[in-house]
Length: 201
Ligand SMILES: [Zn+2]
Image (tube, rainbow, N blue to C red):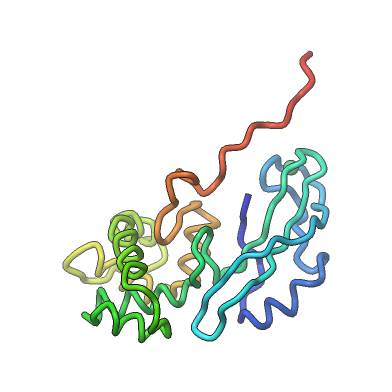
C-alpha cells in the first residue's frame, strides 16, 4: 500500500532526508491498525521526471510485523503509477486547457519540449474524465470559482488550492488520484491483496 510521505519540500531535500528510517517512521499500521511502529523495510526505486530532474528516486518502505504487509511512503511531488511529477502535469494541463496553448507549446511550458504529443493527449483525456469528480472532491478546500465547465472549474480550483496540496488531500483523505486510477489499481489505488492466512479455529 502506498501512503504519502509526511515530508514536504523539494526533490533535493527529499533525497537527502530519506536515508534516516527513524525520521518519518509511521507509528502505526494504516492497513491493520496495529499500534506498533513499523519496521524499516528498505526502498524501492521509481523514475521521476520534474522540470529540472529526470532520474530515479528511492521510496522508503516499511513492514508491519503484525499483518506482514508493506507500506511505502511516496513523496508528495510524485504521483502513484505516473512517471511525471505533479507540477509538470499541472503546468501542461493549465497551459493547454486554460491557456489555449498548442500541445507542443504546453509541453514546452512544462519543460518537456521533446515529449511525444500522445503523452499530453493521454494526460488531457484522463483529466477530462476526472474533472467532475475533482470539482466535487475539492469543494471543501476551494472557494467556489466561476467556470463554464467542469474542466475549467477543476483547473481553477486546483490552482487556488495548490496542486500538491490538492493531491495530498485527494490521495490521503479520499484515495483519489488527480488523473484517476488505472483499471488494475481501481477503485482506490490498492492492488487487490489477499488477507493474511489465519489459522482456522
Ligand atoms: Zn499491519
